[in-house]
Amino acid sequence: METAPQFFRHGPGPLARLVFFALLSLLLMAIDTRFKYLPEIRQTIAVAIYPLQRLAHLPTAIYDQVSGLFVSRNLVDEIAYLRQQHLADQGQLQRLLALEAENAQLRNLLEAGQRAESKTTMAEILYIPHDPFSRKAILDKGSQAGIQPGQVVVDDAGVVGQITRVYPWLSEVTLITDKDHAVPVQLVRSGLRSMVSGTGEDGTLELRYLAANADIQDGDLLVTSGIDGIYPPGLPVALVSKIESNAAYAFARITCTPAAGVNRNRQVLILSPLPPVPERPAESIETKPEDKKRGKVGIR
Amino acid sequence: MKPNLKIKNEEKLAFVNSSQQEVLAHVRSRFIVLSLTAALLLNLLPLQGVALLLRPDFVALVVLYWSINQPQRVGMSIAFIMGLLMDVGDASIFGQHALAYSVMTFVALLLHRRLRIFSLRKQVPQVGLLLLSAQLVMLLTGLLASAHLPGWDFLLASASGALLWPLLPALVKIPQRRKPDSNAL
Image (tube, rainbow over all chains, first blue to last red; front, side, top):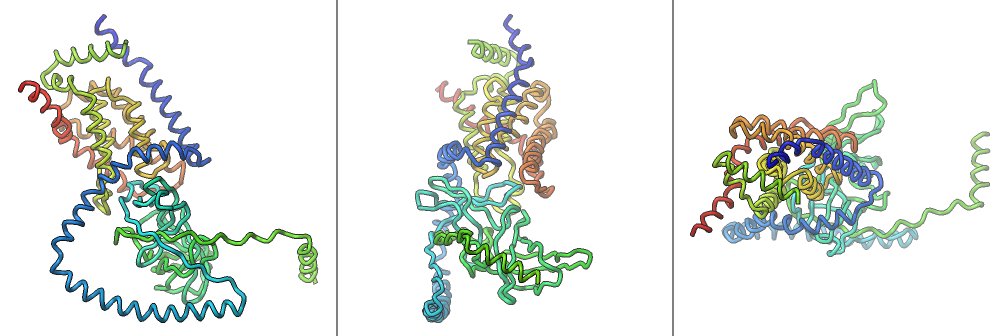
């Protein structure tokens, strides 16, 4: 009698439980990917593991503090370098201020809308999740610091990504190298507009659906075009690194290298959201006759 | 009532069977929770590049260890919960790790008697296969969701995890060995 439960443990128990858990997790996955519900459960779990995430970051933070104590000898050099840099930046900034004032005046004259200035929040990358299916990073600022989904993350060299999920004290950035991420860009040299998409691999981006004869060269700089209303215009995104145009295909294969990278520095800036894009003008009755006219013109 | 009876039976049997099992039979749930928390912490460490690629899934390892050595305490429900925690920590699809860990634990529970016959070194390839099964489940679900095939090097984590396996019992048992000593004193 005593050993009886031992034998019964191999009965339908484990299998039934496996089926239950498998169905439950499949259901959760379906809800998460298709309907984007479940934020509450995710939030709760995120709060529960938050102390662990901070604790895991502690060694790095301590290392920074301790190494900060021992670099005082390099500080003289660093200060000299930073002073030089500051002077150079200051010069550029003054030119920029003049240009900005001029730009504002010109826009006033032309009665065009003003360019929005964006405020920034500094954040630190806590860690990079080991998920082969997506490229993300976890930042140490969340909704408590006023972060919202959709905000753009940049570093000193260019665009890093976009905030896609916010927890009370943490947020997730989807990097521009993520397979499902695209940034509207513009070539600085030729003004050509396109979309740059991630490939799912670190350090490579792709310009899809660009004609094989498009005006593009190795080393061309891509900056955000700003037409999406999410990314402010003019932020560096990537450099064109390789162009393969094959006559057999309508489109060229263009590979780019991202300008920014999460592997370089841990500090990033979160830009404040842009003012909402003005509403798309509703299709009024007045425009329809015009369309008809145009159609007639086209026929003629 | 019944689960308690089962645990007692298991403990008695384990007590009789061997001296190694005697130590394990008295595992407190506190140690299990502690080791799982430590594994989660290790999984959340800020690593980059090759280190991140080679980092074994510590949570999967520890769940596997307990489901083989304490199948009455750690089963699929704990594996499932740890999976949900990892889903949030790894920013993956909610339920992806949970499914993978549940399947892995199911296989481990089926094979735990056979596995315990082997020495730790001989368990290495089998544990590697178990870890691989979890990664393959993740791969399948990931493919369903995003249709993006990651590089083969993603599977290296199973190999590194399996190589770490012989060291794991020593690490997990550290807090367990102290306990009887403090009682004796």
